[in-house]
Image (cartoon, rainbow, N blue to C red; front, top):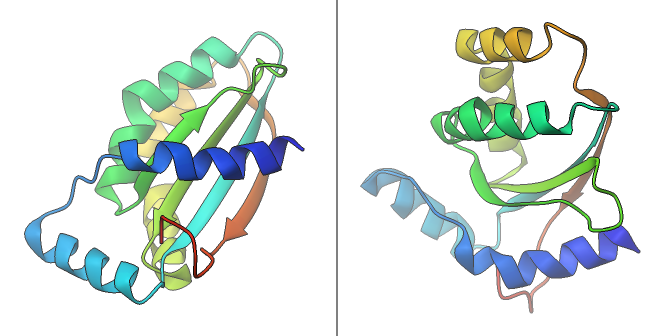
Length: 143
């Protein structure tokens, strides 16, 4: 049920996503979007007890900029009302291959490794991660 609500929320909140792309990247993104090629990823992080504040800080202070640096379009972040130790977010990519390249570059980025290590000096922030990959329907307002 939670996943259905979050997927529906994607439609509502997608209009608020901010694209930070240069002109060439914007043109490529529009072309991919027109072809219906965008590939979405919904990630659900279940924070370890007492680590939610640190998880928010890591996203706010480091992860957002690194996602943008590596070509990931941040659609939005949510905390389910009934699960306050859970962070759900959705990213968009031009296609599956771009997703794979972006994550590889992100995970190998020295700034990410440094931020992750610093944020986890007192223990891991996340107990587990769930991923759902999605493509838009032909009638979806976001593609």
